Amino acid sequence: MSSVARVTTITAFSEKSFDDAVAVGIARAAATLRGVKGAWVKEQKVKVEGDRVIEWSVTLEVTFVLDD
Image (cartoon, rainbow, N blue to C red; front, top):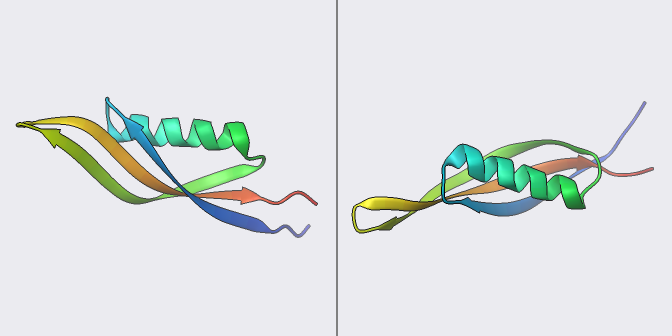
């Protein structure tokens, strides 16, 4: 069986952790896109206020299979 996939870039944010930011991004992608098969974490960033990390963000390359 053959299939064709597409990759889209999304950025997700969390006030908890990188892991949570990834989970938020995947959950949101899966709510909009059918056939999500995986993701690559392309970039990680943090937002700092004073001496504390207040936000974690990830840029994801999300792969999903196109419908026939």
